[in-house]
Length: 498
Ligand SMILES: [Zn+2]
Image 1 (tube, helix red, strand yellow):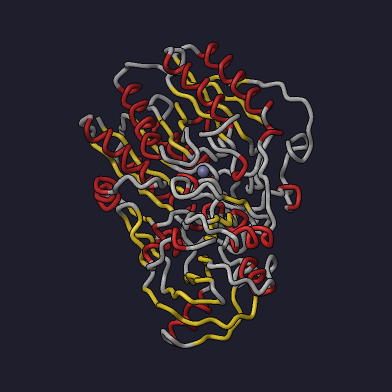
Image 2 (cartoon, protein in one colour):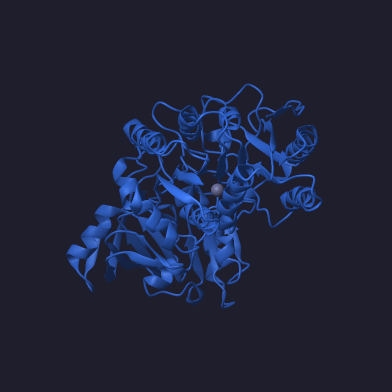
């Protein structure tokens, strides 16, 4: 049994400045041939995209499959992908497929919210390219993020699509397993699934819901009950990455079952459920000044979380917002704060100055020059680091970094923007979030999985950023005429079954 395994995994924010280059993939994950297989064989579970490739690999390997490497590329969420990067990946996976015909099956693990300079549906391009080589009879099963834009084209060219069922994404590993098992079951003839797909004309900010709380929780439970009752093999409810401006982009439901008509009815029911709760998905915002004032009085032993999700690394923002430090200076606040900012020139200047010395320079707005204004600061250099941070059994590279003290706030300044929604980041730099009155976290909902056990004092802040909750403030160009929250019309779910 020969199974092709691969994928390109990146979440794009159409409004983030710049372009994602090949260097960004090489900095994170870019593996082809045997190197991808070796990587997938040892990669630990750590709740990020590469988990899906690793868990798919292990399910296929344990079933005795001969796994063909289709290559795996993943980069930090960010700006639109340079076209040659996508073209390169597609050529590589086509070559791997062609050279290994006949294949028995294909498993692809991707994000689903990619966008390149010439394509609004890179994952659809990849599925189609593979389909054209392997032919109609070979199953292609796909694993994606809950924030995927599942395109109709992807549905038409894949046999099954399975997305994360939890947000915060603590089931990336299981999603890879679901995709691989579906492939094996189709290859062995155990199942012959039909896939029903319904598009939902809505997006909501990623900071305004989780699968662990209502109302989304109950809707997900409904899907799980259909699976438990044997009416579905798998289901997915996608809330499309809301900062993605693409043609044909939708939230959607995918229901997979042996009975296509029954799956279609369930898909329509779940889609209607999501649509009906659209107005309940809201982020309650607090101003930066107010959060600072709350934190100044915080002697609970638990940190107040200033959740600057608008500058979230995992939503594609650049992490260079100096808004919080600007307010700390303006308020002359001596709140004991801990924060993080991505500012390569400043980090390098700190390293140049050395520990114990003072750097007087502008902080922030080095990448998002149209969104933010740099802030003049006087910072005492407390430490310098190479920036490789241990994170759940792997290393995340923040690049050469420094820790500075500005008033009573400690600021980790890095040269690379990386996921920072885990206290492991600050601990790796020598600071425990629990020792501070206020900690700034630049992540959407994912951080709640890690900070939730430490504190319930979490305040989404009304900051500016490429991942703002105020979707109406963004220059969307490709949104269909009737699409929530830009308009609010009627919605009658229509299912495509294949
Ligand atoms: Zn996601």
